[in-house]
Image 1 (cartoon, rainbow, N blue to C red):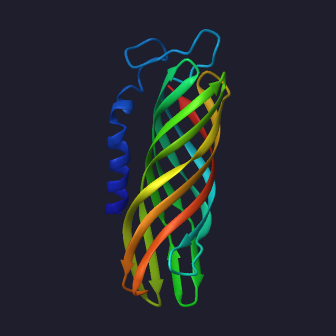
Image 2: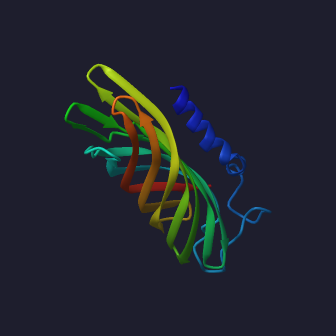
Length: 205
């Protein structure tokens, strides 16, 4: 739980400036870039929820942890013409696990802090994202369990559609690579790689 709280604090801290702006109206302000007249406005602070599925593998083993995942995200966008860029952090609970031979591996949670850069076709935003990732990889052998918190990177592509001035829906592909760490139960270095498809909604403040 301490590791989960640390990750949550990391995500929240990285976006503290964005969160402080959440109470401000969607209108001209020093840190608010309005869209050109007649175009959907992507600028400002947003927060939302997501749900998806991940297909993973544990390096140097035959393990392929797959499962549903879900969590929340918070971020901030800036808009210059049709170009939209910003930062987003998310924290996810992950049900991905796999048992092979005498071993079981799972990734109970992960979080990311990523930059986003996209191009808006009015209320349709196409974007790429890249940044840092952190999460747990848990290995089990008989009655023994071993967990390591691992850091790495995450990147992907997505499309977000503005449904109303305040609500949007998105679909996103994300690849995550958590770097190898030594596991005593396997006697080798093991890491976690995952391909994820996520669907979500955001509320724009």
